[in-house]
Length: 179
Image (cartoon, rainbow, N blue to C red):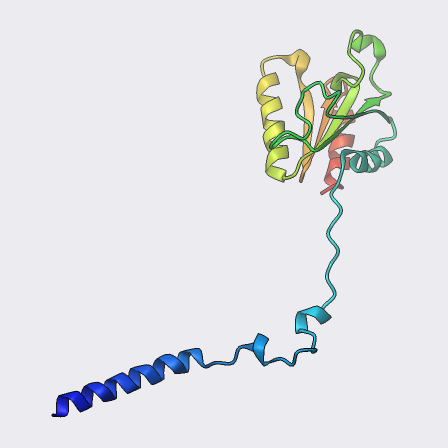
């Protein structure tokens, strides 16, 4: 006869333990109906404005006086057909640099990196770095296509190889201020 009493006692203890675990207060249900929650009183931080290529150019042109905006690339006129595509740039501008001699780049199309450069902005820093790596790998064996590439976070600044390393360093310094 002792066994059924012991089993019943064990069952009561187990039931009490299970209900005790679930009997903690539910803060959402314990609050009066018209009382704001603690998080409602905390001001929310506004979402950060995404940097565009035009924004980056404004910073760049303040640092490198020889630059002049030559174009804002749209998905309709993007020569690379990459604007807005998955893992590609979300905005792009092109610029000229007055230190490049026009005779050196005869035949270059308007908007060409050879005339000055381009700024491409990506969603992630990894995407901008991947693009820079790709360009460097493709142009490694072709000096006439070489360029300087400077990555700062989500921004890739592509600069003409017609600039000297010292001149290109101006862009590297400007890129460092973006990220």
